[in-house]
Image (cartoon, rainbow, N blue to C red; front, side, top):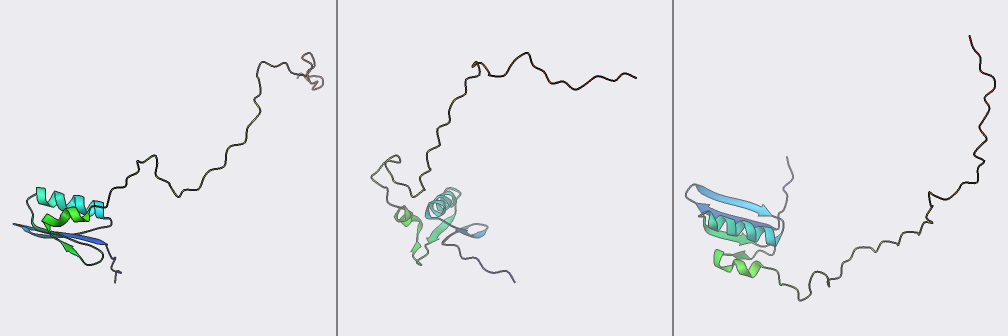
Length: 113
């Protein structure tokens, strides 16, 4: 038997064909789905929160998370800071080489058949 998965937010609504019960993982997605159901003509749209609070369609604005005062650039993240890359010495391609240009390897006498 399959193990039941617990979904934090349950969105339900009723229309002329029946009812829909849909689970969502976050408040923003549940709010978006509830508003879509209202636009599609569903009646009695409700959202149940993880703490068991049931919000009616006129109380959906209570589900919005509070907006922060800082802009996105000012918010601190918890990501690890990368180490700076090690500086590499640049090799100039036009620099002369130290090899003798006239010397070539000798493979011995060529055999002809």
